[in-house]
Length: 249
Image 1 (cartoon, helix red, strand yellow):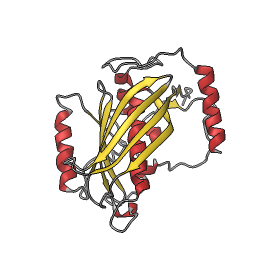
Image 2 (cartoon, helix red, strand yellow):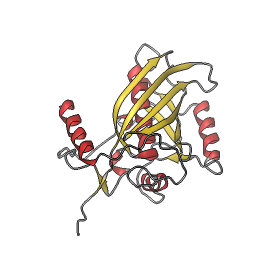
Image 3 (cartoon, rainbow, N blue to C red):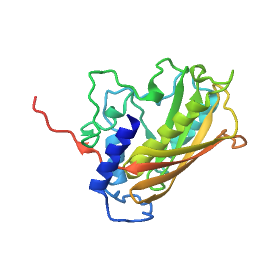
Image 4 (cartoon, helix red, strand yellow):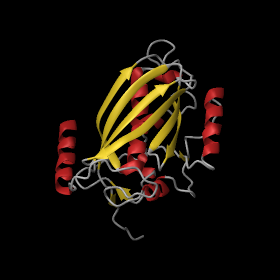
């Protein structure tokens, strides 16, 4: 099934392939290879007026480190062009009016869609995180506090939970920085275990955009940068979303 999915993606890329344009440099209002500026992508992804629940807001489970660093970055949104990304329960809610390219739509009668990192609804028990994105520098910072439902070794977060958190932060950054939609590769080197309930800071950077791919790096570490939990790299495929067909009421 996974092979079939990537075969479909490969066919789409072949039909929509762009002329080679290596090393696209970051820019504040730079259009992506598909013509959408970072600003327009952010505007759609972060609606100002919405009744959708934002799960990336402080709650009683956040530890003091998580809360204080959140406040620091919130202050940076006022002057340093950092943007706090909302986190809805499904990616569908971030791209309303758009859909995956034809050939990649999966039919289902399910209605309660949830992104993997928002599947545990109890506050503090699973993924507690918030992502801040810097458009012009094409980088992100994710504050991640793993809960007890993510345990691997007793008292420590499962390595897979950190891998999922890295992939999720990569994906949001890739989409906003250059319409990156699909993970092509994800390589992780684990260094130290993350204690459950503690704060891990993920620093994500887009290294280059080349041949319809975004190349990215990440380091996950403690707030004081004295402990490195893991380092990773990821490659994401650029692919433009399509407009949903208009339906009259």
